[in-house]
Length: 193
View: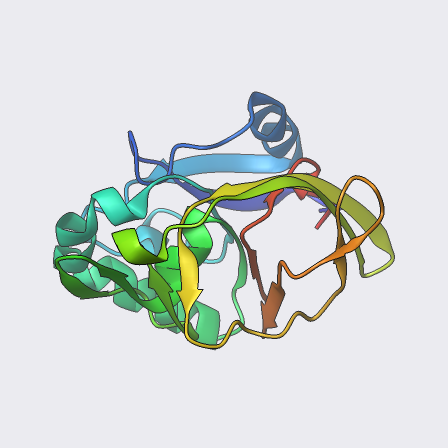
């Protein structure tokens, strides 16, 4: 972000709550920041029509019924992505952009921007944990990964190779679709995207 931009950030007590204070401080320095709750059934783009959209991590799998009921919000985000809107989605935010989240209680439709299903079923729980780094568009990004949910079925290919703290390749995908960057990685230097 080299020039001032409008930044729209999903924020909720639990679904989209994992945001570093340093990230917020840096984003505030880059433009006007407005928060919205994805559980509200209104288009967030009425607040900012052409923003940089940031969907941070959290636990959307614990609030699936509320997220499903907010159909207008999900549709607005899907349409924004399809029009080429800029989105960065980390962990829970990436899950929210997927086709659906599957739990022990059933399958819940999400935004449908990414054609993947995420499993939050007990039988599929597996800890993925560690520091991550990758290069994208000539810049180096660092972050960490911590989650139990998994892609259901075949894992998506990664647009970029991701490495752990020892410099070893890991299978964490960085998904790029139009102007969307999504991953399980929580990025420390997000403002460089």
